[in-house]
Length: 371
Image (cartoon, rainbow, N blue to C red; front, side):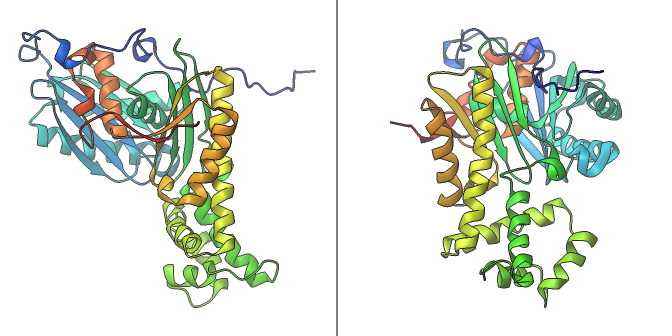
């Protein structure tokens, strides 16, 4: 008889040795000698890509000027658009960012492409093989998008990143490079606490009211208005016909608005979503044995859903892990991928990362410091 006990001791994502946290924080740009060899670099550019279910962002860093240029394209989640669709979106974004930076591929020292659903060696290599325009790049790695989210929130230091946008995913990295991923199974098997999960449960609340098995909710008229429907019973044709994952996730904004206006059903959906997402973080912290102060970086638009979601998430995480320090990254995930590209190229120490990304200043903004 085979051993039917499921395996759950091997991490789903492992960091290559070149991307693991260094033993000490890298020196800041201010501590480098004035003659740091920025100008003489044979390949002065770094490339990072953050590819998700809604859009793909490419970022190019010019090491000589410490300037970051970005460009966006459509979705590149492999489970949503497939390998060819993902490759097309990535290259559209990359060409835009390289063009704005005035860079050619053979001037790029390293590229890290962090793409949703790029979970296995096979699909990572299959995607990389389709990106023929990037063959002149010095070194190229394809990783799951949650790795870039981790780098953007912790500057590649030990800690946890939790994504809640169209989908959800969580990754923790310990000081010794051990990793644990929780979630990231897609909308049919997971995505708990994501915009998709919230939007879908908002739709279900309206359908359950129509059945007579649930109370009235302001989500009913919001559903009809948002999707331009006359009857609740028309929603099934929409969901099973033309509506994709992102289209369902879009209704999460209406659920948040209904909760803010006092709707009890919407409030419950958001609190349930916050707790489910927090369970991913708690699992990661427990499996890695993270103790003391631990940054938990919150990435994605669902964290803007209001107090019912964020309060439920925060309470559930910090009750189990009082040292958890919830932060919002000031650096975008695409810039996080650039940081990893710098680590891959051995040029991380040439950059003042606190000034790279979406906003100047410190790399993270603290949300909660448990007492």
